[in-house]
Image (cartoon, rainbow, N blue to C red):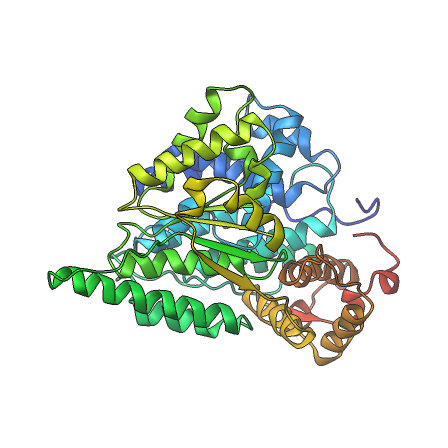
Length: 444
């Protein structure tokens, strides 16, 4: 919702159409398809600005030849990138490309430009801050606050989009298996998941060594089923799996391509097979992650997508890993319903819900990644909110923490709206009232 008397956000260095052009330029220099990356950037912008009144019209004009429905479709696709690197950036990082940081910076500029779509809202500022931090952090470029901007809203945007000094423009050495496993072990919670991934790595490593030695090896499927409630780290672990498999030379690229039913199924039979095959081709060399895969059951379009997927998995069995994810019971039914799937998905990894302590730690780390500081009093306020929040299958887990941070950043900007020259400490600190809807008396 908008704030009628809120100060207008800082106009970004580039408008959205200019930011998308700049993104495409970086993409071309990195050897990526400019059209694909422009669509990726447009989806990220839509996801950042989707709560702003009038954003759909502004976005459609900036993108060119688009409709307001295209805006909402793009926002749905781009929401995943408010918390994680986009597919193209994921691929660059997996390859150790020197273009990773410039591309992440260009995506951060897109997120900043999205703040200028429609009427200003505090929530969009929070979305942009967290989304930009996710891209920059994935590429190894942390965000930082420079000299204090003239308004709190400018401060929020500056925090989101000002990267630290980029590394030299040289090829970055891809991470080793041990380095990636260390990253896995550093994740909050997920102890059962970590043990299973370590076991999978040991099996695959020994299998590869036996092949190199000319010995027989057991047939071990590399495809995985991730089960668990939303926000329990499934996508994050899938991204690490891609890097680990690439480091083991089981995949040539190691990138993660995340999709759902809408990106596999077309509007009529025959076209779905083509659409699914194109998605799989884009994931070749890496990991195809299908969220809520059971949504592909129950109709002939989904059946066509699954049949095509099974064929593509066989044709690309030496350089593709597919991970399907969703709630436990529906996922078991999904895999069991198709013999082609049941023979390929033999390993199920269960993701437990996070505890309150883990969710506080996640919020703290997310805030730090966006160059904010969660005060002890704010952490205590968050614990109270957690205690009052019902837990069920639809509870967001890590997404709950991320959503709280996005809203808190907006409330902080509103709280500082009349402070002409806020200090760096004021710009960084999130206070208890920033996590409390009622305290501010303003919608988010």
